[in-house]
Amino acid sequence: MSSTLVSNMKYSDSLTVVGISICTAIVCEAISWLLIYRTSSYKSLKSTIDKASKKLETMKTTDPNTATTIKKSKTKKIDRVESSLKESSRDLSMFKFKSGGVVALVLFMVFGLLNSLFEGKAVAKIPFVPIKLVQKMSHRGLSGDDMTDCSMAFLYFLCSISIRTNLQKFLGFSPPRGAAGAGLFPMPDPKSN
Image 1: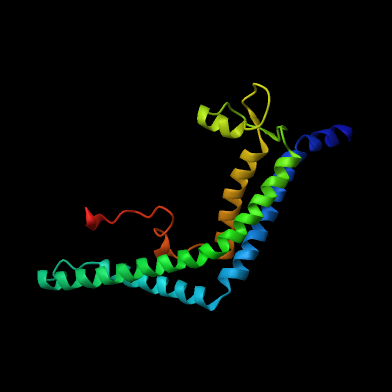
Image 2: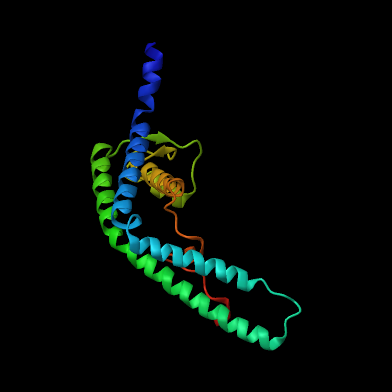
């Protein structure tokens, strides 16, 4: 019984960080739902993007028997649909940007709280020695030379990214298919080269 209690305490710090990360992801998605996803503006933008991406997908399926003049007019229509899709995706990104400040504030507050709780304390062990770049992140704020020690910041970062993304997919809040390239670093347009 006492050995089970000791082994459970061994993982308590890492489980605390993971649990707080899950709670933070839920709170952030609730804030996003309140400020973004439940509004009619978001729903109309999302449906516009879905319709435009489906229309673009059907337009891009080509028939080899079409003449070149038809291809030119079809190319112009495709360009118009693509530009409207980019514009709608940009509008959606700007719409989401508004609540991003509130979510960022919550994340910074939770990170500050966790940082004060686990300052200089290893919360997990990495089963391998990471490469130098990752070592600087995973061993941030820890004393000692054991590079398999994992700081709270690194564990929280990994959990936040993976949990929040999967929670968005589970709740259906992931961006529409056509808006996938409308992120911070969109894919370059092959036609402009």
